[in-house]
Picture 1 (cartoon, helix red, strand yellow):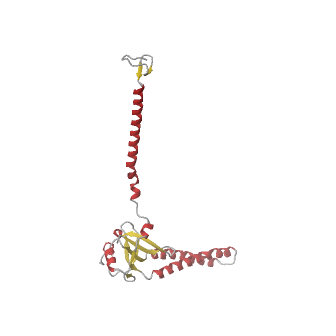
Picture 2: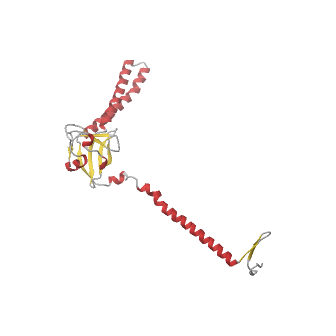
Picture 3: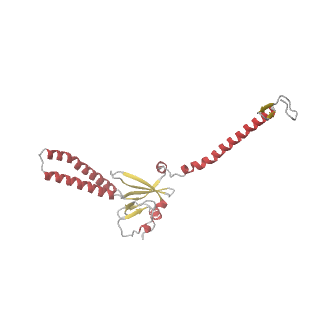
Length: 230
């Protein structure tokens, strides 16, 4: 098809009812090549944008606190110990055993009562002892779990490992940053008090330790963390 400016018949023609558009094959290939190149540039820009956004998306994961497994790899030095923690552990386990035996005896007592072989007073007495033992166990464990047995400081002097008892009388290690520990001046404890409070800024939980009943192994490190006694 010939156009008005004298193009050869090898050109491609696209027409409708009133207009005819003539395009050379060389020009058509150039247009297609340009479109492909532009599409590649867009896709490469999108990939580059995703790569730039990826560090922003993963930033919160890098700011997470260290795992306990990582903290346990640090070397800790003992700065305080409470020798009577072993006795408190035995008391906690004995009280737990006593409460368990008391509740195990209740079903046979009730069975014998329904069989008419024991009196109501014996059932009431057994139930009262079981309830009293449970209350005593909870009250005793509430305080025994807050006694600090040992305090360790890592070599970098940034993390404390605080050992205390659990409800079952087992040892539990608590890892706390040094800058999260309140000094004795902030807690308001005096030199004459037997029990001192170990408080943290990030938690309302209170632990207890004693410099009179316990032993301060490293006085310099202890003073650096808890400060002087008011």
